[in-house]
Image: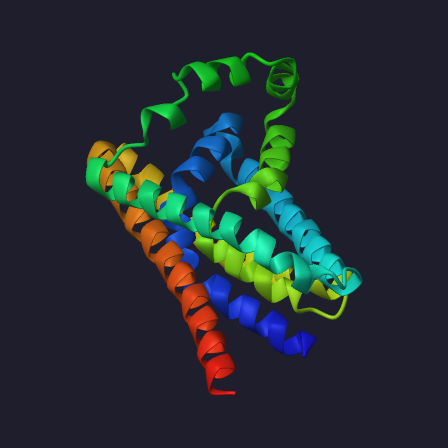
Length: 237
């Protein structure tokens, strides 16, 4: 079973690579450029290594939680509304991105909450680190980025037989999707050097919004469909 789960996560990462590149490619490129053009590859490697480590830790945590907590089924009705609200929020954000081709003001780095966060002491310490270390830590934190595809991969990891197997599932997903996250920033830089960065940015943001709204809509409709199917079976029984 674990081999099948790892294979599924690997294929999901390969198929979902364009989604990852559209959603996070620009951010990855910006982080990788912090080390300078000459060290772009080195910084990108550190970023992807940190991302793989963060995803593996999240997969192990998911598998361990499901394996050790028998109350998961009892807690599901309490968690379902939170999950539903998160998906609805992701759909709204995706529609906004597709319509406006820019992030909302509250997500902007110039907003008041973002400014306070950037001036916090931990962020100041983070800025003093070498570019490779900053990239690695940023990649390790990528597991908490809201993403429907990532949530789907974590659900697969939750089905693994143990923490190591869960970590293997998410490692496969992270490595497979890293291919597009490596090529996407390269393409972005090429367009930027040729003067098409503004148009490419607009298209990328709109595409990311459509993919975010689509993946969350699918997740939400699938969850509701399962609930309706269970209710129908209970009524027939």
